[in-house]
Image (cartoon, rainbow, N blue to C red; front, side):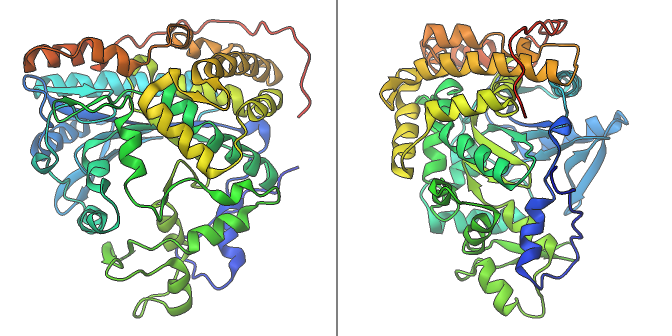
Length: 474
């Protein structure tokens, strides 16, 4: 049996290493309570020009949603910079990208229902303001310098720092959008197994969900420009977790990694205190403090949220390699990963299939995926072949997982459409490039067809649990 989840007091001062580990122990869940969380970023553009929407219009959109009574506005600097719902939240990324962080759901139908309601509400209000939502991984037209900064204290600190630590950090902040999926684990060993697989799947996720081939009005030469941007953001906090290549890796190794990443800030009485003037790691903070301030569990949580590796612990396992996608595809990522990670047979088979030998091999796989998508060759086979096998593993995993917990639907329905992409070998990015020509208005029309919300959001979900294969021991 897993250790019961630990409740973390954010105001508790850190006086021992065990408190750092407690954050990750707080994520332990028994298998019957494993849930999936989906975080979906979308670009917001002017419906007539395709240019990135300015902050006043985005704030007006948030205010309109708050006025429906379904959301509570969140203020900073007297501006609406987010919304809180009953189980979810809407936040703004630095360039005005809007992100829905949905509830953790034990079944994908729950994730779908929440996403459907959100898309319906937000696109209705957006139309009134002449705004368009795009499920695309990079801003299609607007230059970096012409995109407004959302007026949040943290971005005023992060923005200048990005120019000092990498070449693409501000592009990441203001011109990119992605999807994240959050998954649970039962104990430390299960967490490490899932982190390893999550990291190993990065090339596949970049290839299968590549959807960012244009930037600032031009083809970039990449199918996932977003992936290329992230790789050149900040070497201290992006990329891969090399300690996972050790067979005895555990929570302590994640702690050691995080302790040596430079800090951005801490928050006291609602104010962000800038720690970026010198290379000041969390280890330094524990040893020295910062002025009169000493490290708390809330500081540790905040610091962990500023680590941007392909997979991270928050304390759920968060996978971060997929580009933003059209609404009809947004839950495909969660469906694929749930089938692979929550069924032991599928997890083991996927690991045997994708196991990398080194971080360098993973980086090479990702670079190939950004460039060639499903046609990229990695580990002796194309990523198209790997995707085909993983899709079947996930389908079987979802069917067994549904039957094991006596759920009345086979969630493999949420994978509908992936087989067509895999068998064609053509990514969403390549489909867009075929239609990317002519005038600005023609290109905007192509984007609208390709990825504008709401799109088709209605899979047929009434699929019974029909798996008749052997049970898999937990």
